[in-house]
Length: 174
Image (cartoon, rainbow, N blue to C red; front, top):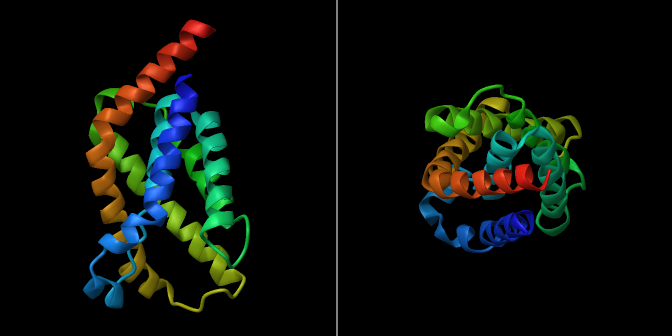
């Protein structure tokens, strides 16, 4: 029951990410920087942190493939692979994140950085993009990390409570 609720929440943020957020970014910013709000990726990181690496991998692969099919066109599989890797790596940290918001935000920041560099690296190797790494880092990755960390900070408490309930229900059923 709780996992289906979690999937619906991820679907809701998936729709917001692709529709409303494009209108909320000021036009002045869009000429000099590229802000990529990855709300679902932040939630996949939290799932990996609180529910484990395998659950983070499954949600990352599923919603990454959904991103590839619905929103992004150059090739299928880049977001699926990158989001799956990020969900798995976020779950590999061996610590108690439940009591420490800073550690969780650090994991989200490192995950966002890894996610963006994986996407850029794949596109650069396959000649989809010709942008320099310096330009991508300064004009795309840093603003995206900032926006996604802000979102991660805003949703930390409600998501932590939801994921702790999911974890408790899992323990009861096992």
